[in-house]
Amino acid sequence: MALELLKSKTGRTLIESHRGIEADVPENSWPAIKMGHEMGADLLEVDVQMSSDGVPFLRHNYQLPDGRWCAQLPWRELKNVKIDGEPFPLLEDVLVWARETDAKLSLDVKTFFRPEGSLTKEVVRLLERTNTKDNVLLLYFDHQELLQTKLVHPELTVRALLTGRIVDYAGYLRKINADGVSVSYGMLRPVDIEQIHSMGAAVALIEYWDQHSELFQQVDIDMLSCGNPVEARKILGHQ
Image 1 (cartoon, helix red, strand yellow):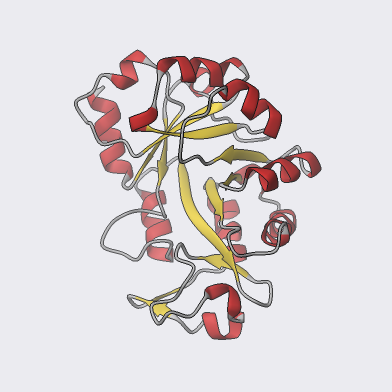
Image 2: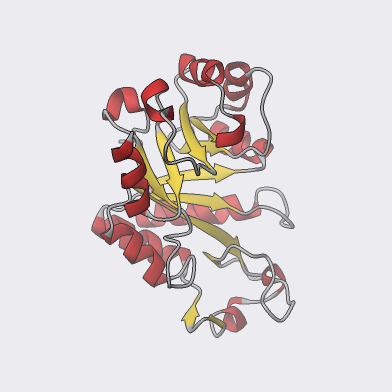
């Protein structure tokens, strides 16, 4: 069964924990993933890149601290790199863990500097191999790749990442076949939320900082993306 994201169906705002968790552990690391899960995140957002020899792994920055580009290095080198004492998790291992623990993942597919479709192809292959399509939400800044992914694999759940405000949300999301969209707090407008929900897509609120706003009483937000699930619950509880 595909992920259910709409508040109208779940009855509440889901909590998405950014990069596993933002705490005293390295982002996108096993400690961050497991801590975010233990603290009750509904979705664990992590970043997925790929080595030069086609191995998907978790990391946000495209470069290593020494300046080398991750995409130009084979996994045999990358697997020995540690950030604050933690190695990069293999996506396949994380997917197996998600299946065994019934964790839900938001995979930010980092397609920058990659041949079109190459990373998505490997991600989908691993989803099929680990039987975790229903555990995963795929996130894309590249909306062309999002569309192609959805056309070939309509059973997958996908969300469009944005850095600006769209003129016609409903029309645009329908055009690219997106199941959801990220909306920045500073650009959030109730009319946009209504448009998005009118075509059955979910709203993920990002960059939210005003804990004393009555926002969640005024509009239906399907997901709150936050650095820490505990802080997110405080925000939602305050509302």
